[in-house]
Image: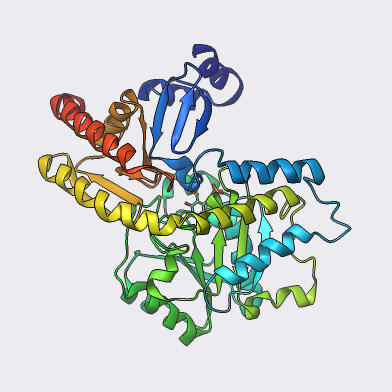
Length: 413
Ligand SMILES: Cc1ncc(COP(=O)(O)O)c(C=O)c1O
C-alpha cells in the first residue's frame, strides 16, 4: 500500500497522502458488490459512505453494468452531429419522473456543472443577477457553484468570486424574506443540506421558498445532487413537501454507480434562453450515449427495486437504533438526524468525527464526515444494503464509540 500513498505524494497531492496516513486509511480499493467494497488484500468493508451519494444502486449493479457494456459496444460517445436517441430516452424518463411541469433536461458530467447550468439558466430567464444561497451549503467547486456554497475555507483563496450572491442562514424563512427583491434571479437550496451536516429544514421551509420565489418572480433551484435519487425515502427529496422547483440539479446516483453524469431539469419558462441560441450552453461530453443509457437503467433499477421505499423503511428502524447509541454516549454524540438513509451523527466536538471514522474503518465500515461540518459523520449507504449489514454497522459503531470514550480526553486536550 505504501507505494500507492507514495504515488499520491509524488504525483498528485502530498497533503492528501498525509491525511490518509493520519486517518489510517491505508488500504487500496479493488472491487465492490452491493454495499460492499473490497480492498486489494481481499478485505471487505460495509460502505456507509456510498461514494458521497453515488452508489444508491450499489456497486456494479448487474443490470446497470450490462446496459453499460451494451452501449459501449454500440456507441459510447456522441458524434454530436447526428442526434442522440439515448439523450431523448433519458430526458423523457426524467420528465415523467420529476414532479409537476419540470419538462426539459440539459445533460452534463457532474454535480457542479449541473449547478453552473442552473445558475446561468436562472440569470438568463429572469434578466437579473442576484442569487440567494444558504450558509453551510455545498454546491460544488467550480466558480459559480463555489460562489453559492457556504464555507469560507474553500472560497477564500479564489476571491473575487461571482458577484451578487447573498447568503442567508439555512432553514430560516424570515432571513430569506428580508433579502428577497425584484433583483433576485434565483434562490438555490438543498432540500436537505448534505455537506452542511445533514440538516433537515422545517417542513414549512421549501413551500415558503416556493411562495417567495413566486411572489418576486425568482427561480427556485433545488440542488438534489446528493438527496436525489431515493436516499431520503422519495425519488426526489422535494417530493416530501410537494414543492415543484423551477430547476432541479441531479448527478451522483443518476450515474448508477457506473458512469459520471449530471443533469438539470427545468420548467418551460427557465428554458427560454435556448430560443435565443440553441447552443447557448453546451458540453462536449454531456449527455453522451454511455452515460445516458446508464442513467436510464439507474432510474429503472431504483424504481423496480423500490429503493426509495426501502430507504424509508430501513431509516425508520435504523435512526431510532442510532438514537439509542446516542443516549449511551451523550458526551460524544449530541444528535442523530436525517431522513430515510441520509443520516448524520453530530458529535460534541469537531475532532470526534475523525476518530470515530478511523475506528469504524479499523472495523471495516466506511463512513465519512461532512465537508462543511466536521462535527457530523454522515451515513449514506447504498440503498441495496441489507438489514443485517446495518445491524453489523450498529455493533461496530457501538464498539467504535466505546473506543473513542477511552481516548477522547487525551486526544482533544
Ligand atoms: C448538494 C451537492 N451539490 C453539488 C455537488 C457537487 O457535485 P460534484 O462533486 O459532482 O461536482 C455536491 C457534491 O457533493 C453536492 O453534495
